[in-house]
Amino acid sequence: HHKLLVSCCAIMEGVQQDAERLRSKLATIPWDVLDNAGQGRLENARMSLAQVEGHLVEAQKLLEFQRSRVAKK
Image (cartoon, rainbow, N blue to C red; front, side):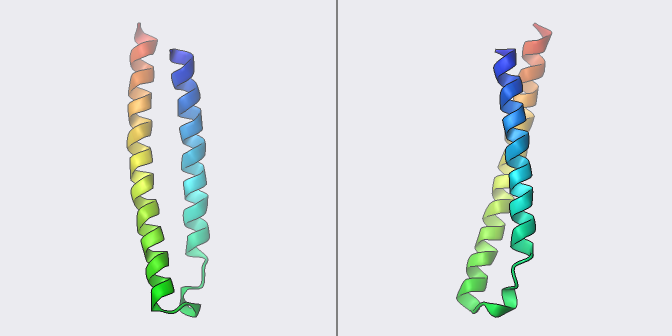
């Protein structure tokens, strides 16, 4: 069980890094070349990504907690 939790934690770290790269790429998009609808969609994407990153952080904390619990047994 511990081995599986360690593997999940490693996967979550990779996903979190991917989300950071995506946020960075979103930031480089020249919003001024888009119309209002396009800008709105990009803003929605940015906000959704921020929510996902928050959920990832919480999930990672839960995995770390479970991993530490299993390691103590």
